[in-house]
Length: 106
Image (cartoon, rainbow, N blue to C red):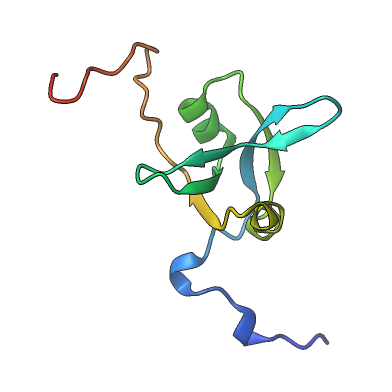
């Protein structure tokens, strides 16, 4: 039986879904690279989705993705200075691909 250390558990607000996450990536020369985004406040964040359908709906059907656990994604992004993880963000671009209206005009 393994010894479980409770002092290493994330705070309840920081817990991500227990199952696999679908993480957007982009092809590089010989591998895939995790995509990082910015929050509305400008903070860098790793992004993941709980289903492939949600990822494709937010980022488009041509978006590449990989499956990772939240712990694996945090391990990959933390050394790069990206400690935030956003799950299931919504796209800020209209579904038809048109540019959003300028601020103050609708």
